[in-house]
Image 1 (tube, rainbow, N blue to C red):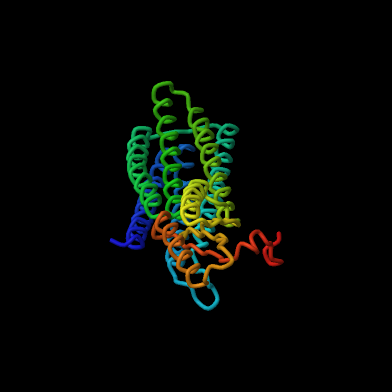
Image 2: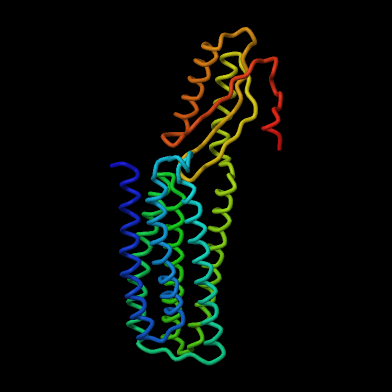
Amino acid sequence: MAKSDIQRQVMNLSLVVAIFLLALKVYAAASTYSSAIYSDAAESVVHVFAVAFASWALRLAKKPADETHHFGHDKISFISAGFEGAMISAAAILILYEAVRQFIYGVEIRNLALGCWITGVAALINLGLGLTLLNVGKRTSSPLIRANGIHVLTDVWSSLAALVALMLIIFTDWPLWDPIFASIAALNILRVGLKLIKESFGGLLDEADPVIEKSARDMLDEVVKERNLAYHNFRHRHSGHFHWVEFHLVFPNDMKLSEAHDHATEIEARISNLIGPEGRVISHLEPRSAERQVEPWERP
């Protein structure tokens, strides 16, 4: 099955599960009056909107290059991840607000056993879904699906916090466990949301992947040594789906252009094969007499 089909299927699954669990948690929150479960439901509301946006972004990211987007549309993956991070952070702030309100005005909890069962089931479902999304995101090099997987796992933490709070209330008969654990869950959710936003900015600003860069540089060092060549101006970025690599290859002044082109094509192919199907490699050929000559359009 093609990567795009796998990605589309897991995102559709994520959306269906998010809607189902939202309905389940809203029912649990209305039945128990628990701020921890309310916070869990609020995070699920955010999750439904975030997954819907991510599903649209995934379809847009797969559109090929056109007359107005020469490099394709896959940068939307980073925008989607940032949007999801912002939504997670907003949910965390909402949860903290509700917890503080309960600290001030008191807590009234009921139907604790029902709340425990529903919250436990929701946590298990999200755990399986989140791990699946992370696995697919890693295998298909999709920051969008990976961000969605991280979001689902933050939902697991909020569910576990609600579950622990309800169980402690059952055993200790002290209702303030509810806003305490809601606050803990909110702070963890906020941490994850801010991390996603940071990673999104890194992608939008063409932050290089150190692992890919090291592998590509090591291979370049090897192949240019084999051919008595040199290289410089190595650059790398990840656009959301493709890994772009570019560099200058330096050839002897007396080498024919056709021969230099053949060398460059073989080197580009080796680097591309190293990176995988998402590798896109571009080299610039120059004679040794012009080595490290900085052109005006290359100056910072």
